[in-house]
Image (tube, rainbow, N blue to C red; front, side):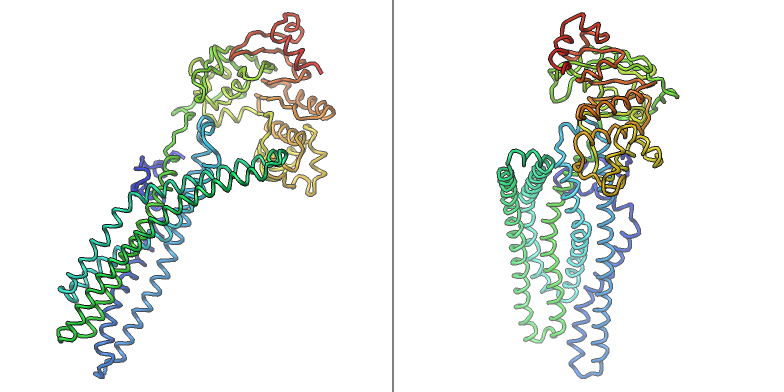
Length: 589
């Protein structure tokens, strides 16, 4: 993810220079790239040889001098070479495009999932998916087609221009007048096209983001009968994207049309002059035919370059958006020389004067002078009103964020000195809203420990009271759970998440209202499983349920990002204050 070859230095975003970011990905496939260049050289040579073969055919194939067979045979051989080289060029460059885009997507995906929670908090997932898909697809066309056409056209333009002067310097001078006129609209239209292309891709990303958000909350949409409203919103976003795309297409069409008119206008002028030379006997028909073909090849290539330039402007916008993500630096990184956590881990956790502000709310501290000590094997429950900072405490321990001051340590080691991956392997998390993947029940549970055996997996499911309903699914543990576990009830989803934590068997356990979605019968069974799981482990619980609070060794009451009281349930009730109010309002059924 931090490979310098895969993450080159910053490129000028939104300009053709941003396409330089693609070079490290192309360089990985030197064999394909070299084969494409070789095929391109052969096909370009054959293309430039074709007018000479036509000249020979015209001058000798109809003259009766005995060279008719050789003239037509030469023309056919050139055509065959051109066909085979063109096919090889298409094959190599298309395969190169597929592999480069796959590498780019892999690199971008790995980079995105490695960025810290702060980045994802301020980013829209739909827009990130759009960059990963739509912008990458645009680059596939650039590498697999546009790049090849650009280089081929450039070679043939230069080659055709040289052969025009060899064939007839006087006529070539006329043809040369058309080239600056053809290039002029390309240069003038490029800046406007680049802006419109970037805006067009942004509007497509907006529509994709809206769709992803709505589909992710489709039950809420349907529960409020807002299908028509959401359809109108999406249609409006599509209309904006179409209007922006229309401006891009209109600009591109005018640039292309003007270039072709100017180029072929120059060719007509040359043909007019050449026809007079043939009539005057100063040029053979074959020579004029050769000159015309070179002019057509050169003119067509200039027209292709006009289209290619426009496509490259679009691609530069897409690559600029991707480059912005590739150059995004994670706020949470492993230290250069990470310190290993003691093994076996005791689970002694300390929060010392921790202060933390979310970037979105810099003036409002989520934690302010937060102090807490969890002894090895102790279960501590955090309680407090919404916004007190309870979930932020878990984020600090998982190192999703780093404090602005103070420190968090485990067994005396500051978590900032530990590789985040190694730290999180020692922590099991059961969130309030579990995340399940569109995979089988077994795969979702095994996410806690990827190489666990089937017996271990099923034992964890039984302990979480999940085995019975999983066995009743059509394919048992092999049954697909649907996107976000849509085929399960809320309580069943929670039990799968608890089974995942049981299977991970980590020395530190974080429970974020882990029994909140369970019915009374399931809650009792799962509570017993959690008690077995918590035995001998340091457990930090965010609790709103009385049963969880009563089982805790200690309760820490939070308000405004700090702890205002600690003790057992009975002690805190006796003290009165905030906890007694919360117990009266929230904990007593």
